[in-house]
Length: 133
Image 1: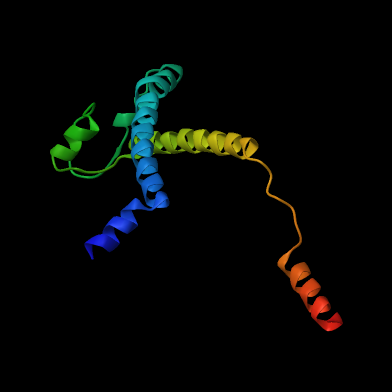
Image 2: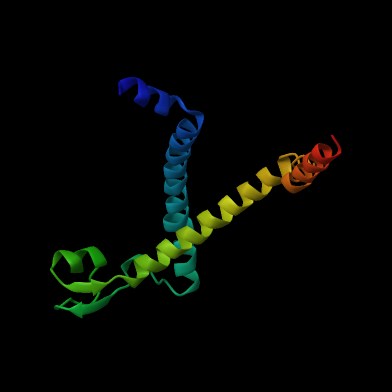
């Protein structure tokens, strides 16, 4: 069983996947920082100082005006944190766009696949050869 596990781990696609997950997690932190520290403050400036990270709607419980989302949750209020959702959506759009650009460039850099006869063409040719022989 140990040798099977070693063979599984040593396969190239498993290692590639592990590297991809690690790089993806690090890239996710960069995008989160970009969104939280640069994009959202600019959006807040444009919208008159609105801080989306602390935008929420109280569903039940009592929350004083100006309370942060974390403080409202700590106080036991049932809150709908729609500002966090907006931030997460912006993170997703940025990450999806960057991944799109990476895949687009990778597809341009890859050579076109070799064009040859299809399987049907080959099988037809074999059949015709066998009929002649």
